[in-house]
Length: 126
Image 1: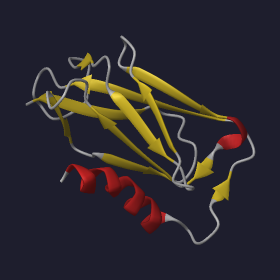
Image 2: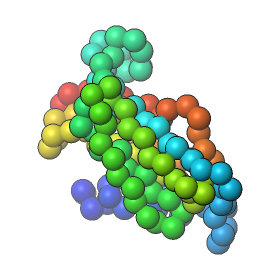
Image 3: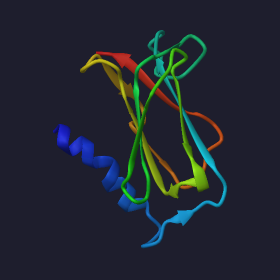
């Protein structure tokens, strides 16, 4: 099951690709993501939720290259791509600690271009 979950971003990437050639942006790109713990258990990201430190942000580009970063004390992570990166991209996040957290809502976010707003991943404890 874990292997299938690891392959899911790549499979989705293939499905949303616009053909054999991926789009190439000319400028630099920064993809920002936030991990939040749903402290009020309402299933929505809001001001009561707390940042989740140590979550793994995984971004897979159109060539299948994976980029991984870990959220800081503010639950944020930033990945930079000189030249804009290769789109489409697939973003996902895994909680810190083995099987302590589970994602609520979207587990995978597809990007067809640079998104200026942070990608938000909401977690709850198991």
